[in-house]
Length: 132
Image (cartoon, rainbow, N blue to C red):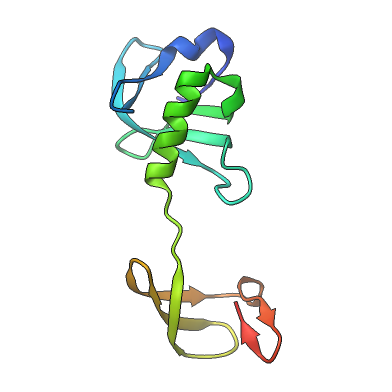
């Protein structure tokens, strides 16, 4: 069951000195090693944050980090940055089709990968027949 974080239940979510996020659930169980994830990391990385347990189940929802005590907000921000997964595209090796469905073989800063685009909306056209 998910709890929305408010001033009255902030004591149910805390960070230990190593930025390990912990929570006390409604039944009194203490859960450690929680992972905060921003639902919109590129546009609103300090808002709409879910706190997940080891099974990727939502334990808490945080509407805005500014609602939290500054120390807790900072610890959650540190954990968010630690878990951020944004790839930097270095090279496009191969494109199977210029229309969808299309598979792109790419090189990222984390290694080689494949991107599969199932709809035209996923590809943004650039000048001179480029695509992003």
